[in-house]
Image (cartoon, rainbow, N blue to C red):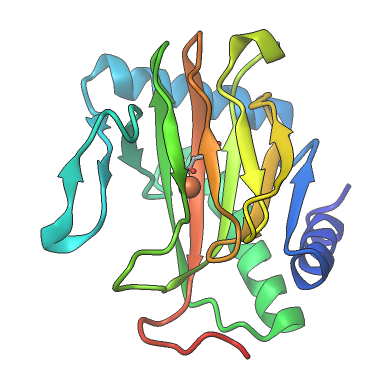
Length: 206
Ligand SMILES: O=C(O)CCC(=O)C(=O)O
Ligand SMILES: [Fe+2]
């Protein structure tokens, strides 16, 4: 599927049901290159325990989330390739949904065995700039028994789907509307989480 077709499937889903799970968001060789880079960063101790909250409220809570993360800057060849796709998606969503996504931020996340991420929504109490969440998975041959499932809920807390974090797969949803959690992983779990953002203090669409 072309980048344009993929983007239009995502746009259609976001404006109808508000979420989509995609079996192939990035090509297999790009997933391999990104996973290698993530492991190199880990070996260099460049990943830091993820914090929750924002600004002065930020704190470390391994009981809430146990992953280690590193922001992407788009500089390496693999990241540059990914950023072209993310930028094309941002542009497409803006042209079709008129949501004014100004930029995106993306981080690598590595969940060691035993780590999880409690149920949450991706926008902050005092900052709702994040409008679209996209998580891309980088793990080979993931089985349900490996845990580490993304459980996605409706705004009314009904379970919608459980997504396996299999290499190349992605899930995309409206950041404010869909609570979600990562169940405890039984093996190391690698991913990239991205958030497309509007300018701060933009009112929510009616
Ligand atoms: O890795 C996932 O499946 C979801 C991660 C997540 O919810 C987050 O980083 O906000
Ligand atoms: Fe999240």
